[in-house]
Image 1 (cartoon, rainbow, N blue to C red):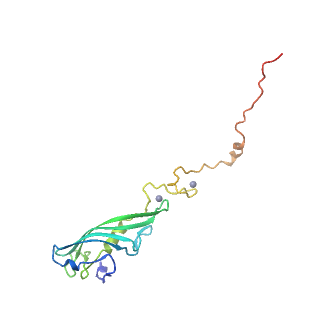
Image 2 (cartoon, rainbow, N blue to C red):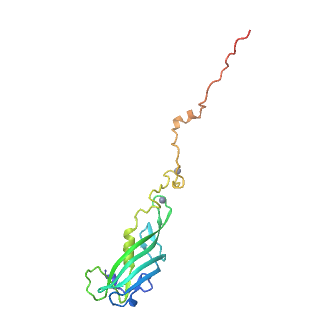
Length: 193
Ligand SMILES: [Zn+2]
Ligand SMILES: [Zn+2]
């Protein structure tokens, strides 16, 4: 990725400074912090709201080739259920395990993440993980009942919801007649003299 060679924005919460760690293999640093999410993190139907908190729980470890970062990043998600159109709020935990190689050291792969000076940028990592894991058809719950195709009512709120089958106009007139047309007739009592 050529983008790793651009100067990193130290204001981004996902850019971490490894200066304190030094370059002595075996040195270690725990990071436990909350940072702001960058813009445009997600897909059209569900995304991480810009500036929402990302909880970082990471371990930076100095190794021979660079800095190994392991741990988790928890992001907030907001989207819309594709069936009932209600808002979805969720969170996603991303497993982080990435070796950032020192600048100038021979990368074993072209794709390797690199330190820029003392800085590492977690954003490409978080971005890839989020975008690859997001559902293209997000649901508020697996068995979301969706909306009534006739009137648009939310069937989750009204499970018994239904519409009577429309009446065939040819029968309409008949149903209006009193079906209980039982005749009452006089029963002749016993004949009296
Ligand atoms: Zn739904
Ligand atoms: Zn309906």
